[in-house]
Picture 1: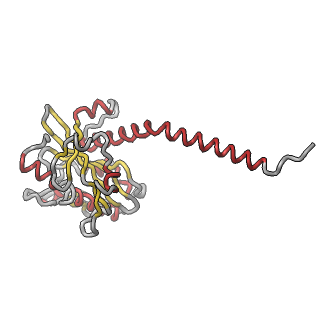
Picture 2: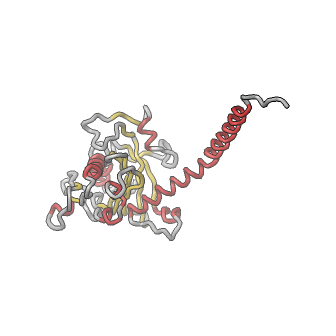
Picture 3: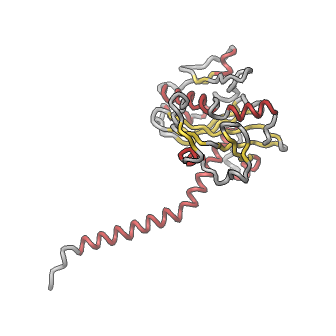
Length: 261
């Protein structure tokens, strides 16, 4: 009986590895549409949560039927026609990295630690009988360990916060991870983003925010044991609601009284 070639086990393992990798790659490609659909559903849930409209017992799509997705140009605050940029296919994060739809930020302007900023942003209008009653805006910025992604919903007055949600981050559980805590998120409701003079006035403070006096309407509790994460939330709010973020858009709506696009 002849000896088995020494290389035979090696070839067997190689063939097995090749077959397994082909199966894994095929599964990844096949599951990609499902993964994308799940990602979109999760984002819609968080948009609804920020607006205070999410009901776990109802289909997400039906709850989203009164929300219109649009595109705005950040620099000008103007709505962008769907014929120019489709809200359905626009990927904001990829746009920030591209040469034609993104630009680098200098350190002085980059409060949120983004490095690059997209030309256009998605915005979401909550409709009631064709009137816009809320505007939900996507925000992101650096925390202690990660980039934090979330949504902020403003009332029709374009300054009162209806709610916020964070849907992705890598902050420390029990500390910076408390940005997902419902009790802390509830503390944002009713706070004002801008003063009557349209100056950005909102601040995440260290410790407890005052409950009385003029400052109370602009200040939010910090996060115990997570000062750097709380500072990151404060900075990303100041970026996205400042001159390089949504302020031109919100000022245009405020001055023209046009929330409907």
